[in-house]
Amino acid sequence: MRAIQALQAGGPDVLELVELPTPVPGPGELLVDVAAAGVNFIDTYRRAGVYPMEYPHVVGTEGAGVVTAVGPGVTDLEPGDHVAWTNASGSYAEQVIVPADVAIPVPESIDLRVAAAVGLQGLTAHYLVTSTYPVQPGDDVLLHAGAGGVGLLATQLAVRRGARVITTVSTDAKAGLSRAAGASDVVNYAALDDLTAELPAIVRDLTGGQGVAVVYDSVGKDTFEASLASLRRRGMLVLFGGSSGQVPPFDLQRLNTGGSLFTTRPTLDDYTATRAELLDRASEVYALVASGDLDVRIGATFPLARAADAHRALEGRATTGKVLLVPGDEPAAGATSPTPGVAS
Image (cartoon, rainbow, N blue to C red; front, side):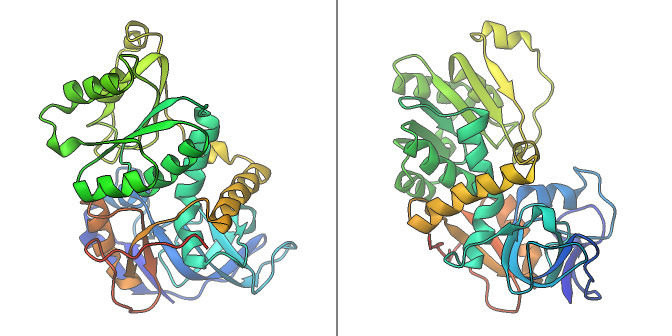
């Protein structure tokens, strides 16, 4: 089978297409033919060495596909089943070993590419909006990267729960996508001279001087100060990513002087800590997709061999929605020619 390895820590150029033996599922494992693999910022962090990894390693942890073989002890899944996963190492490949306890059954009504696109980001948006800070009717919410994969999904989920959502984006085209997802106000931060000073002023003007109940921040270093300053009294900053870099240590006393603020750094693993919780979240997300109440945007697809281009597009913020890698050699639909997803 073909797979993408990171040969060493570094930029996208360290990614190489290689031939590897077809893996064999062991006890409690599935062998899956990959229909699509999700491309995520955590893949770029691991490739670059931000997170310690062994090299070479096959990149990727997310995807969807069809089970072709099961290992000993697997009783609830069988060959031919459609599954998705968010935590199976080596997913940038034509075939992957998926532990059965992290495999999510995919309804036949949902296309496998859509299932791959909504996996990590859909579950993330769900736990952020329903669990980390459960959005309430009437809440004002600030969401950074509003046209990204999580951003578009979290906006829809927050609006469904009765919130007014304010988003930030980097281009006018992305602003249109964010508004279409339900954002009431969209700020193009590229037009601001001083994000840290100007964004909180805009947010407070939109909220009658109060600030927002919650900020969902996946950008990190570049937006953290503006996020803190945009919160209302007893507001919560939910830092769930660092696409601009990691936030440096800060004095917790600032939470006091800012108005008894809260901050948290959640991760999906802790919100899908049991299989029951994983399947419950996934079933809620899939139900919304299947009913047409949650639109999943596939912003770009690349053939497996062009994984490096996919990483460049993602890190260059040249994409919207979800970026996928697909088997075969079909032409890529890149940032200049997005492929919209369909809520099947």
